Image (cartoon, rainbow over all chains, first blue to last red; front, side, top):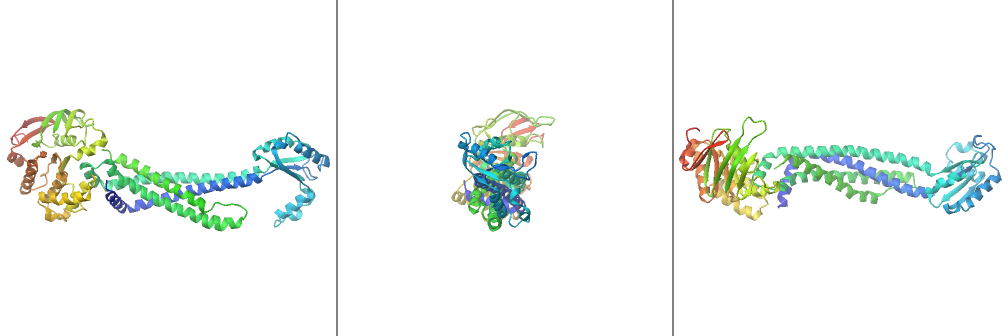
Amino acid sequence: MRFSFVFSEMGVAIKRNLSMVISVILVTFISLTFVGTAGLLQQQIGSMKTYWYDKAQVAIYLCTKTSPAEVCPQGEASKDIQDTVTQRLESATLVPYIDKYYFENHKQAYKTFQQEFKDNSVAKYVTPEQLNETFWVNLKDPNQAPVIIESFNGLSGVEEVKDQRTYLDQIFSILNIASLAALSIAALMLFSAVLLISTTIRLSAVMRRREIGIMRLVGASNFYIQLPFILEGVVAGVIGSLLAGGAILGIVQVFVQGFLAKQLPFTSFVGIPDALALLPLLVLAGGGLAAIAAAAAIRRYLRV
Amino acid sequence: MISISHVSKQYKGAPRAALEEISLEIDKGEFVFLVGASGSGKSSLMRMILREDIPTSGSIHVLGENLIGIPNRRVPHFRRKLGVVFQDFRLLPNKTAAQNVAFSLEVIGKSKGFIAEAVPDVLRLVGLEDKANSLPSELSGGEQQRIALARAIVNKPAILLADEPTGNLDPATSMDIMALLDRINLSGTTIVMATHDRGIVDRGQKRVIELSQGKIIRDARGASYGESG
């Protein structure tokens, strides 16, 4: 086996078929950029989930004067109700689930609200009485929230029991849909990349059918005949995936770290190391896919 | 060397069999003319010997290989023991004479050193050492066929198949090619040559196998082309 010869044959094939090879490179590039973006988005969702789920609490909102009458017929929750809730939270059945809890009265709730909405005009109209007095419960295992919800739902004087994770889940499901959309576009593009690679390889084989005919006559092994074509596909696929890797590094550096991270300073975002970790996978995917597509195309074209 | 027994070939959709109950033996060192009209089955038979096609029935043994049972991956190695030339030379137009010969060695993985020695040797044998760097388009038909012959024999095959090697050449050039084939034959290579050329066959006085409509109608040694051609 002489590799220099195989590589020079591959070079000739690429030169003759340059426009098709470039189109393979571009399609692989775009599709793998989508794959990589979806991958990073999934990582981002994962890291945000672990970060926020740990901070998520179950809120037991007590009735206020302004609460709707269907749930709070007796109006503002009395001190008795506060005691009942406290007793239950301290009871032997619930204690094993609870990490810690604290009570937030109207004044404290108002202060937090003013802080959180300080640039919002709504802050001017809200009065302390309108804001629920709330028991904030941190659970040992955030997945056990239904236990707390069941214990306090329907208790008179309690307006609502809410697991904060339900708000997070909405955000995450939107992000999930975005990454799924990126993945389906990627799948579609990868499919066309595969078709394009097999067409390119077959075209390349047609252009070199004299050489192939002679190679077969003088007894070149199938592997030797097919290798330059497979390598042609692999080279195009690898170049495309390297470009995709570069694009993803650029997106992370410029958009995520340069823009998002500055806008939202308290959130941890995916960084360059995550993108670098993704790079070999992309190259493997691009090269592997191209090799399989090229090998399948050339095998069907070149039967003994 | 070549042993063919009760070989028939029926192509799909063809009205009659391309080959019908062909049986023949060709020994080491023989020079055999395969004659017959177009469509008589000469080319089909050559394809079978080269294992480019498999007969519908019967058996073929070439150089100790059973060509019916040989696995696909062994076919390339089998073909390395055969040389082939055609009417249309089949040279690569963008490679020089020497590169054309070298190509057939490169693709079977021969070393650079081996190629550097074997190519000039074989070009000298066919009398074209001074045309080594010419492109096929710069060579005459006879010279192109010499290059094709050089490529076919550079790997020292035991059998040389020649399918109408003089079909595109004028009589004088054909004589030169025949003289070259005779020399190759004298060095021990078995030659099977399909041809239409009555003059060449008559002058050769070698074994003649005549095919007609897929059947052998004559197999004679030291013979002429015959009446039916």
